[in-house]
Amino acid sequence: DIQMTQSPSSLSASVGDRVTITCRASQTISNYLNWYQQKPGKAPKVLISAASSLHSGVPSRFNGSGSGTDFTLTISSLQPEDFATFYCQQSYITPFTFGPGTKVDVK
Amino acid sequence: QVQLVQSGAEVKKPGASVKVSCKASGYTFINFGIAWVRQAPGQGLEWMGWINGRTANTNYAQKFQGRVTMTTDTSTSTAYMELRSLRSDDTAVYYCAREGYHGSSVMVFDYWGQGTLVTVSS
Image: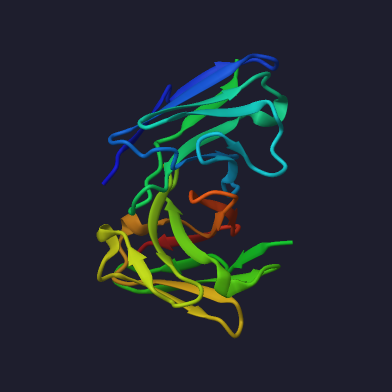
């Protein structure tokens, strides 16, 4: 199975901050990498697909990059509604595995 | 608009089975697969498997092989996930999610159900 890791596991930030989350796959997955945001008690929502493609309706402050094994999600200017947990997920090969998550909370 | 609506919360005893439903609307059901993802309390997301909406072919995570069955009813655009021989560590929120492709070959879980809490307790 492909193992996904994320760093940091949590971070504290303020509104307006630039936030960067990294995701690493245990083997190359090309661009088969998606990012999701999950708020407490809610289902995840897709932000980015294919490593860098912004999903429909997602604000442009979210940006994804990377290929191969190393990926990054950047929030250019954190907004109050962005405090949540973020997960990366590979869809290169089954089982489709998720990273352990990065919780972004208020500083 | 695309919607996935899941059945309600369940409480089961160890050793029992649970069957969760996921009713789809707003798109052509047979054109997309449905995956099942679970999340234990305070934990991350775990992919359980997938069913093809057209052929009903399935692909289960090895961890659940022999204990899970995913099915569909195309007449009602509903997917089902049955998990047997429940244990306390199966306590989790179970989500269905549509497998979409948005201009690329990369599958993404683009729509999710609201989740179904399954509690396993004696």
